[in-house]
Image (tube, rainbow, N blue to C red):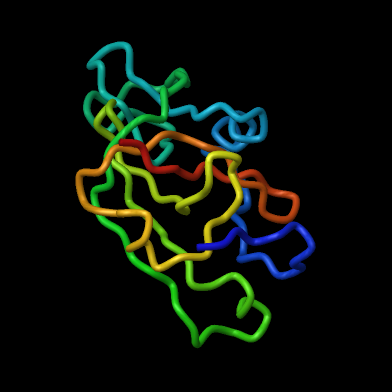
Length: 150
């Protein structure tokens, strides 16, 4: 296992905020994980939406998530890749089910948020394993990512 260094110039493509996702990305830039929550039907809404898919309420507030959860699924990105990304792989991408019940995707990172270059086996990545939120800086973009917990 190793961590990718900041001197590596290649970064994976990053998302572009739109009207529905801007509040989410503003929160991530402050290292806060936010999700819409409907006060009428108590539903967490992910992906961001202009209305609640459960009760059709508009103007959904954003609430902070703890970021703790479990690995729901995971995969290893391995070579061969585009040459620009060769120094970043292998790496683990995880689908995390947060304790609030929603699922998000993110990288497996070290406690300091550095991207781990690993196949996940040495770290013990497994479905059901507990994870904690960390933030990984990729180029000029901050991304929610997760580190493993016992």
